[in-house]
Length: 351
Image (tube, rainbow, N blue to C red; front, side):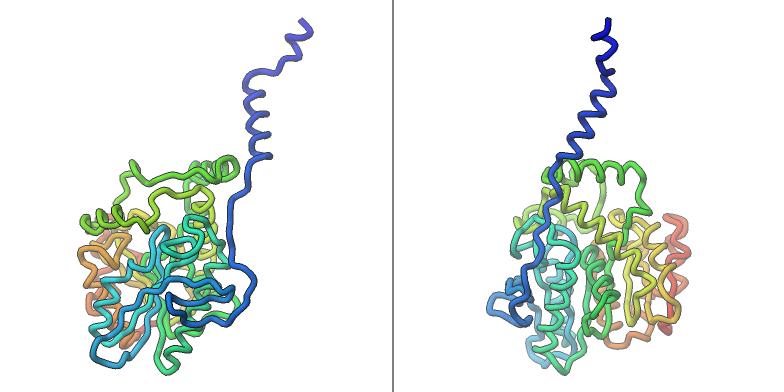
């Protein structure tokens, strides 16, 4: 009888085992940049950042004219620099030279699949900007950040020693912070990163549509440089990055152009609303919503509409966009679909 009374109930045993597992679990794996050893600069195979690592570089340059502006494109999560191929070719025809690099942990950059940490991603962006400034000292330079790349650009622009750029273009920026996530998603991430940080997951079966360009999505599925199986600790790092980007909205200054698709199923509308609402007044930040746009705005079937807007904004940040996506009339177009009536707010840009 005494032994029976001392025996713990099954639920307490399970709770105790879980607690021990959490306490002794592996920490998230992060491989940050090393000690700075060199000034950023161009290299034969890419761009050299501060710790001497070479990040692969993709270039789209005008064929028959001297460039009038420079664009640096920063890719999204699990993607790499090739994402900008269509946009880069379009801009090259209009006299703009574009560069896109593989961020550390992605594409052909070192430590593929391993999260490098928020500070490293931001510092690498600053280093690439510095290298391009040396190559094109007399040209205006703009950063285009897609999804995760947009979050990196936001943090670089709002943190200490921001890079010297002439404007930001944020395409569906990843600002989905924890405060806008359901509790069960936060709980699942908290538990999994403390118990199985190295486990990989895929997006199969979620039913989420990233773009209406199905052929492009199939090509990404065949591209070996696009990461298909993602470590839990990399997702955890991404969420931390998005948290910081959402919180940085009040510190963001223009000129900047923010692009969002009303059909975006990757970055929900609520965090985007919060981000836009927190932007400072009179900061010269233009917001445009595309009624038929998905998360991959730069590669959707209507991508050329977005490309034209980007080219026009670079030419004159204060002029109305050719598509009208920044106008109040188009902002109200998706109201019956996803209640996007209040999404667009011009925080200082004319037109």
